[in-house]
Length: 451
Figure (cartoon, rainbow, N blue to C red):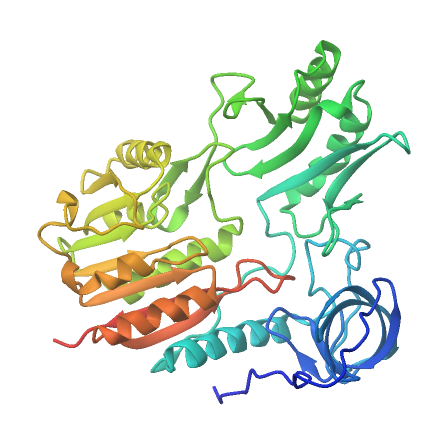
């Protein structure tokens, strides 16, 4: 991929201080290009404008949502001259809901934007380009999300219950009637759920509601005070009528209404089923998750019996397929409850070659007994802040091959620079389109150290 400049033109320092632009002001702008987060970039009177919902080449009327120094944030209120790239958003809430920011952008252009974002971060921070760019891993554009959180707020002044998602760049709640990115079972459930929430006597008690689709459909109701008996009966009747599990969460962790509830997800390619509970981290996009696991195993290429280290293992999303393929896996996670859940998942799937440990992975590994003996390969899937402390110790682990799965290209690029400094080479990289219709970028990179 050809390198592109990521620099922005800002007003030079010095001279007269420009007056602050008030929130709500409208301005006619010509959009020059896209930022990596999908916002249109315009330059006007010495300021750089970032405009939600605008495309390169368009002339738009934008409304200011915030301003600081020489940077103005705005949203597209009206398209005066449309780009040929623009498409009509299929969701009626798309222009106000903060969940999807790129529905006006065709799928191929969304993928190109994410690929460019990854390439620019690797070039800027690590000064590197992979030897081979892999095709993006993608799935359905819509109907992909198997987990979602709905905000719930009682508007005392309007005497109205708002249920939906946060508005873009705001704490306001956009009340929704439908959500096209949800998997079909959750789309079907949504109208009935909205109806029962609006029928509650004391909806003020509810903080948010989460929806889950896996081996079963589940609804978690997070309440800030005890639910009224009549409201609990309504929710229970709703769950029974819809054939879904009802989970409740007050001061403690999520609790099932029926202790016999079982919730999980499957990885069919490896004949695996992983149990999970509301509150556990799980990838929201099942097709892309399965493709991601397959690609990670292909890139890591562990031989049967090889020692593989899986860091930030969670429920065992990568650990169990690695073990199923015959590797001797040491899996490490920081959250004790997740470690126990992963250990249970391995046992239930009959896998004896996966061993789980709890450790703070932001600390040095010098005294970690599980790290003794070294590893032929390492897989890591850290949170957004990356894994800098771990990658600083990579050569001490002895790994020749490292697969890094990232939900933040900036920290991936930072950590890539550290690995390259240790003698690793960036062999492959590519994006994982886990969240279509958004600018969120997930990526995978393969590093190898020559013998």
